[in-house]
Image (cartoon, rainbow, N blue to C red; front, side):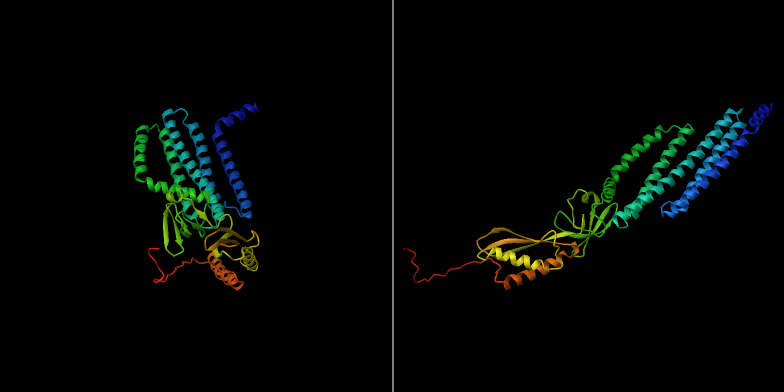
Length: 354
């Protein structure tokens, strides 16, 4: 008897029971999210209180909508057409809420990725990439949501898809170069080939410091203080030498020519003894003196040394050239210079017909 009365009560008031359970579930979910938020705050995570609230709102709305749908279906179970319309409206609200929830979640993920990218590259490149990534993601989610809504309301989208396809082809041709530069910019940023402030060398030998890496182009300040703007699609296909990676250590080469009759072993010893006392020169990798060839008037060699910071290479090279010339001259080693010998003959002794 008690069981029958209980079943009768549940059969009559089960929508209210479901509503109560949904409310309790929502409260429990919010409390759980708050607890997670506190833990994340202690860890200094990127999931802030504002982001947690953004997640709570659509989740709560979805739970309320689902509860409302259960209750309405109970009262409209005898009205099939009305029930179908109500289901479509509720489905629309759920799709909108889910889309918003996914937009919030992807926004948090992209922010985390952008912050990690910024920490890795130690620049503000993410300030342009992150908004673009968010916009593209939101557009994709909205398009998917619209397709689901059309399907829910039995709207034929074949013609629309064809129109969108044609429009996409036209826009693709119209913005071909722009899109190519944007994708190349994303590839350069994600590849981490160079960063803001790095000294790079272009294939034509021009050196410059990276000022900005934008989605369409990269700006470089060359050693003449002029700004050079290079489209990313061109830069992505170039062979770039980056002096800042993998470390700031770089090699300096100084070419010298000494008299071919000089003592080459003595010259090498003089150069290495002088270099080892220079504070700017690294002991490892060790400095080296290498001879390349002996020409009719000189012995050609080059000095290879390493320094800890590439930004000082021009100053160090300039000082070494002056100091090595002075040191070699001081120790009796002559530098070689091209010599042209001209002989003059006495015209009185010249016999054109010997």
